[in-house]
Length: 525
Image (tube, rainbow, N blue to C red; front, side, top):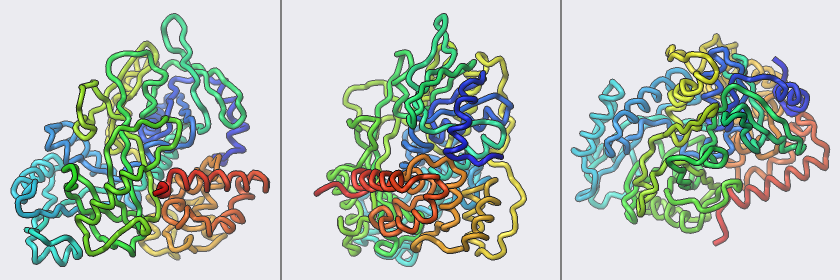
């Protein structure tokens, strides 16, 4: 397969725009990638268009959880929970190294809610939906060994249960790779300006190449919109609307607050569930849940009020750690596309997380949904589009990620082998070839290999430096100041592979550092 990079994109774009498609997918997050993957496996001629970069929106700035949604059990959304826990188990089985089991601990305090018995009953139902018992209560003496550093005033013990965690942006990238290997195509930097209509039916889109300004009409039998918080932008107005809700996170160096489990607890300020959990060798504190009033085309950023809220949560649960603003390595904020019925006065956290499909002739819009259930959402969208395309859709129970024999990785540790196989799937051989050429060194104490950076620059359609450092890898989050100290070495490795002039590199670097300061660091106090 030809290298998937900016040079390929420039050559392929006119030819792709001239084709007649069965399905055009708008939106390059996890839902759009899932739709493309399921359409491609069924032989549909399908193309995905993303206005910025793959996983640019919520799908790189989520809470990283692949979970059944324990809170949905409490709200009575049992069907959603059942689907979620089954899809969680599927992803754990199909993508080890990318989707990893993570143990959660819920501490219980005297007079607090939920108590051990209530929470145990809730988890019993949760486990029943998953088909296996997956929780255990630890009294205080045992919990001290399991979770040192917890606030002990009134602590009765804690319940341990299991969900899963992932690198959300890499999950999107791997799903796209599966889709492309089955004949699907995907382009970033393609903004859909409008839907093309004939006789009151959508027959394609008008798309603008954000790199050149050129516009292309593309024709298709069906259009599937999976644009997240942007879902209201192109569709014909109808029932329901999107309520953009912001969830923000703090990232700490792992050594500053080392945790072996995810800790889930209720914030003393408003009773909302918050988390402290390990991710990529660092520690995450999250998340908030409030209305996002900023422009959707601008990257979301954490506010000072949210910083204070999350630091207060950390101090509440780990008072001896004395975590403050100076300890924060990076931040991120994502905008959840929650489907709202417009009820007046409903708090953000009280909105249901059910998805909806909105349709018009030739076009289906997916609104809402969860990362965990992206495969089921994709099948639902395809069924809604099938009539326009003249095809039928059945759920064959096919794996999202096709199992393949792994090439030899004898020189790497078992943990590295598992990690690389999970993140790169069918492209693992390409990564290994770069490891042979560049060695096995990791970037500045992270788990990311220099060879992975080289492969991303060579073959993962990087258009801008933030694509490389915030989504193809997570170095922009895991390294101090977004990796500023490593940029000279990154430049030496990646600039030739990206085909950028010195002037282009310096401009990309300036843009990236400004973006990081604005949206991924702490706001000015």
